[in-house]
Length: 178
Image 1 (cartoon, rainbow, N blue to C red):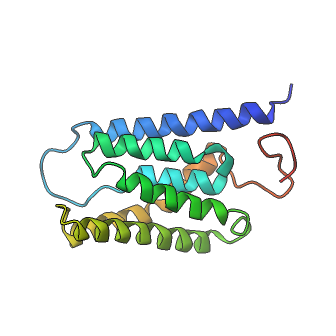
Image 2 (cartoon, rainbow, N blue to C red):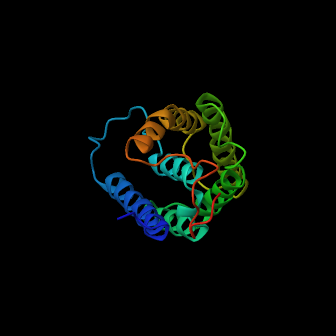
């Protein structure tokens, strides 16, 4: 029996929320021994960007807002700022999904990297304007580089678990051709 498009859509939506919750839980666990080192990449941002570019209908704007608002609360960040920036970033990516559907992966990686870098820069500028304590520029840049370097691995993992870019003939959420 064929799986219905509506079931696939809700499976992808619930899958995104579960992956996001697991990533937040892992980030909350005390794995560090206190030694200063290379900052970890922001996997939640990467997973969200990959998911939006692969299946934009599976990551509604309210899911992105809720996930990143919860992350702001859990990680003691300025409430709603990073969530608002991520909503803007994902909407930027969502609007270009059709145009970027057929581009080569290195170009996709470069475009997403520029978008994530702009979001990170915007976040740092807003924090600086309001004189909010933030990590140093060097640490922020290292985290950004780590995040951008991990994009291919996250995209490859997404492909391995079946999250692929939609093709022009694929059915959308209600079964109509895209």
